[in-house]
Image 1 (cartoon, one colour):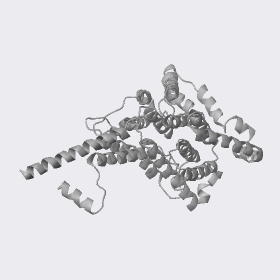
Image 2 (cartoon, helix red, strand yellow):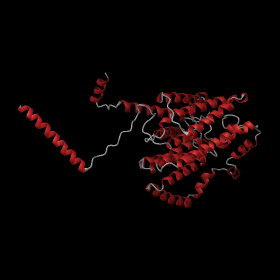
Image 3 (cartoon, rainbow, N blue to C red):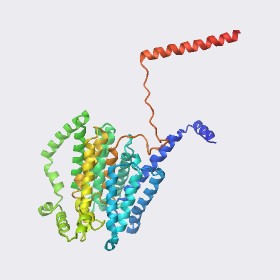
Image 4 (cartoon, one colour):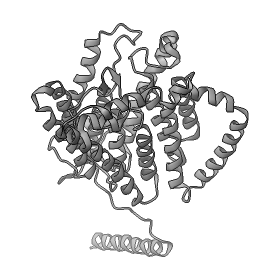
Length: 452
């Protein structure tokens, strides 16, 4: 039956895939769907910020159910639950375990849901760990695809309802209510990844220019300084790691230095106005009022247990004010233990990148780690299920030894084939003579048999 179907498909011109390649394609799709659902899960739903009347219960329900579906899809891609041992996910698991221990206190029952959500998120990342280090950059392509879909929805909202999308002077999601800071995060990461891939010769110039123009325009319209500084710093660090190995990097840095010098002379007032964003001198010195909240957190009364382990996972708000700092949120939620683990995660990734050979994977990882490090001072970071945790997971997946397929097993999904080298000229002559002698011997034996 199978042979009949394959023969019918081949006669109709339909490409027939081998069972191993067909299963590999099936698994790649499942991994991409699971990663996209994780991105959907960490999308912020701002009630009342959408042009489309989406009820708050429906919007938040979609993002929360996406995590459970992502976990199930990851299980279908990795049914044998094969996990790749790595230090990064062990450190992230420590955050989930500590949050679970803190949430068991009776007075903090509200953080139990966030704790189990973080545990599910970490479990999904563990299930996707066998696809780390692939030479085809599967997770990077999945991340770029997810970012492109989100930015595409922002562009559609800008075209359909420009007044709603630019309300308050900053671009945000109009179809799906995404805050301006998160839109800037997606635009900055997408731009940085595409630029580094182009510097490594993996993307064409026209496609890179299109993505940089579109994503860069979105980033400028969001008026988010942290994302812009983080992106430029990440590209600089990634480019410096490739400076000695890539002539394109050296030429691009020279051209960028000329452009920046000309822009600093001619457009300094415009850049200063954009960076100030209409804030007064007092707001600039207090980082738009963030330092006032940070001082309240540091001075808040705590017992010894809360100083070491925190009060449990919260929504990043203190006395009704957004904290907007990964380190202060870590201290408030998980105490000095959480701050130490966060610092260890960043230090581990940077040290691991230092000992990796120069190349595209190392540059991409340095871009992501540098961006998260810069943004962690004024943005909520990776002590909870967030886009920053996905970025760092992607960076960790690039810093492991390269593999060809997915989970290891007796029958790998994409086994490595030995490289076939063409024989040299002398060897080709010897093989040709041996082939001729073999054919001549066969003909002589055949003729002798007929004569007999």
